[in-house]
Image 1 (cartoon, one colour):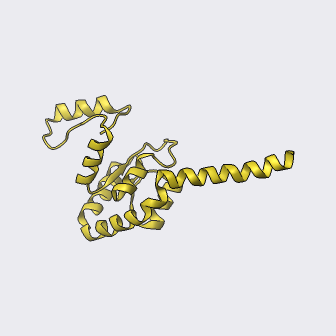
Image 2 (image 1 turned 180 degrees about the horizontal axis):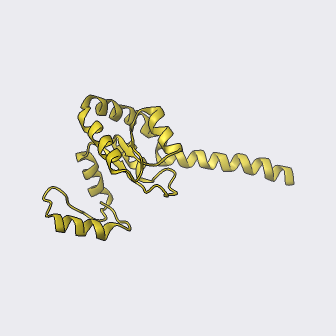
Image 3 (image 1 turned 45 degrees about the vertical axis):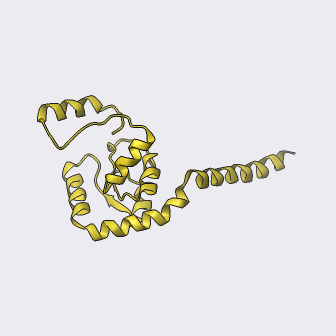
Length: 151
């Protein structure tokens, strides 16, 4: 699902491999995307080693959908996943590492269920309204401090 710089290569791969178990659905409206999430067991956060993404927007969807995350991003997002035990880390750009993470994820259904439970309890903290309110509070705090010093 979605769109990106490798979309054409993905479509060509699917067509040339004649894979019957892989489809590209393109950009989806929110209700359709939510149905796909409901049918899914994991969410993928796959980025190149030189990506500048810190926390992908799709992570918030994965939290709300209770989807454990297979992730390649290092840093803050990796720490969040590991500290809360809500996914699996793999080495970006390393297909074997990705395959190992996926194999681990699907071979441990009890662990996946526990991750889903943790994600559902964590999701409200990362809800849009909660995050926006934190941001507004931070801006107000900073503005009061610095504007107050100027006046």
